Length: 162
Image (cartoon, rainbow, N blue to C red; front, side):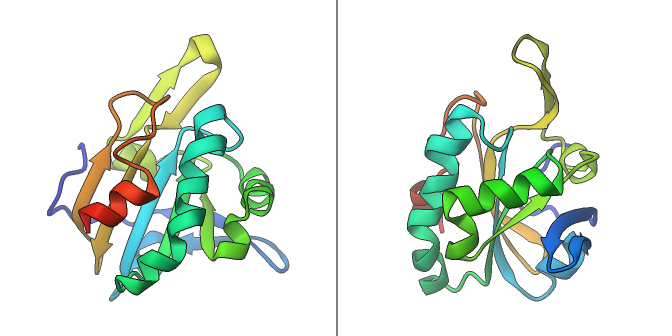
């Protein structure tokens, strides 16, 4: 299944860092009764993700709140330790962006956003996209054609779309 506007997000177990270490969180719990923006990156610390995608959401986080968005969530097929360090290094943590690891690519694969690029060492990763969902139903979906580009999936583009 490739995710589309009008689809319900599948439930999946993702991992975030908590005060005591890694904690499992359910996508259904994060989206139930809430308006959320979820954006995904091919990999923490990779060039476009680090220099463009995450910073675009750090810059615009407060503007999403002004539009009634309850949470901004970054998902990547990385481990939770990397996601936690990356969120701190980019200011995403301080901005209130939740960084979630989809370590087994369960969520990413379920929504048809997985890809593999062996020449650059990216195995079983997420395509670059951003979406807005209300109560778990996708209302806006903007996916990049090329994982090295951040145009329609950046923070400013998502603000314009919602």
